[in-house]
Image (tube, rainbow, N blue to C red):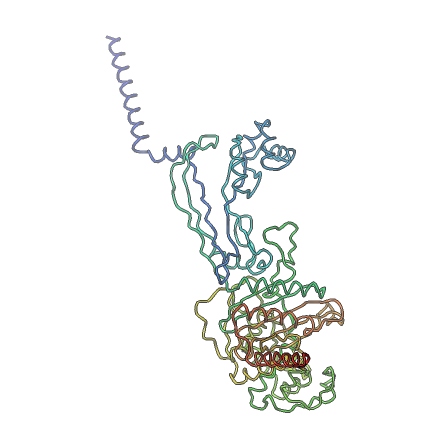
Length: 571
């Protein structure tokens, strides 16, 4: 009997144990399956990111300015790699690194599970490393940015970092637009991280959007070449050039010196990366005079033929004096601009009042951000005062006491070329030109343009900016650089700003040569020839017809030359 009881007890225990096991199996396989599945996945299933292709940057004609290409990054698990020192020689040779460097890096990082061995290798070299099958060495797919035009577009397009994120220029300003969305794939790996099976694609990568800039790569290259040559010839510290489409407000070319190669950043210096057209401030000097004259003409008290007494070239203003190069006597407003008379514009500004001058400068865009979206663009400085001394009004009238960027100056000259309409500047190609806002009387703008044509003509201060076969208008400017204790007597900035052609304006151009060496520092001397060359070539590239009077003059010259030759031949 006792034995029977014991047997029953054992049977009960076995049945209970069986029921517990069955319940546990049901619990593991049915009731709590997701938990166990997740725990298993944590040990074998990996989710890897699929890099998204960054958007391509084009010029206005579809030429590629920035594009991403696939590259391979080699990384390693030091805890695995240190176990196979016999493979280090061939790995170092394939990676093209020193063996001692590789050994030192592995030994120093032995407590880590991840180190980079080589970043952004070409796919061909990456496949060679992959083929070695060295334990602990893995491949990571990435993207690398390439810039076909190199230093020519570096300041405008900008650069990306090694993580393919924008760091400078429009790459930074439009990073949200150019950056795509990474995809995801699920992989099955063993406990050592080796790929066992690629399970499935979880989410496809979405590429970034394309960006089409307003610049014309032909004009960009030509402008860069001419500016670089001028800066080197003048032994200047720096230089800037911007060319805008008067009819649309688009920037057609924007270049700076010194520049840098975004494809090779070895020894890259920060000062070379600055887009001076957008960020550097300069006093505009005499290039501002057309707007002082425009403000005076809008009052109705002046026109291009109004006489202004400039005397012997010396005007006392309070305790200070305003001077001209020589005494011009009594001259008309047109000659005030043609000869760049400081006394002439000073008298006009004092006569109409500083408020009208400041209002005109504000209307054409000075003292306000251009709103292009370029990182770090400056608004310049346009002074507002309750009280102005006469000398402050005088210096403002000929371009001192305020600061502008080259872009702002080009935009202001575009207002003259467009007949008084201000169109917002754009670095992105526009499908439809904006109507613009009228900020200047149309007749006044046309008169100023014709007068600027005289400045570039015979006897004008800007004659070096003349363009063969085209009527152009422009204004020179020369300003002293500012030091820690005021204006420097031996350092200058030379400027030339203008519009072409006069009768049907198409482009507005500003050239700045900063701190040239030697005695030829005047804007008309060092910046004028650059203006002439770039506008001559640009107008021909854009298919602008030569000015009719220039064609007639050329035909007459050709006819006279033919007649002279016939006379010399005795016929």
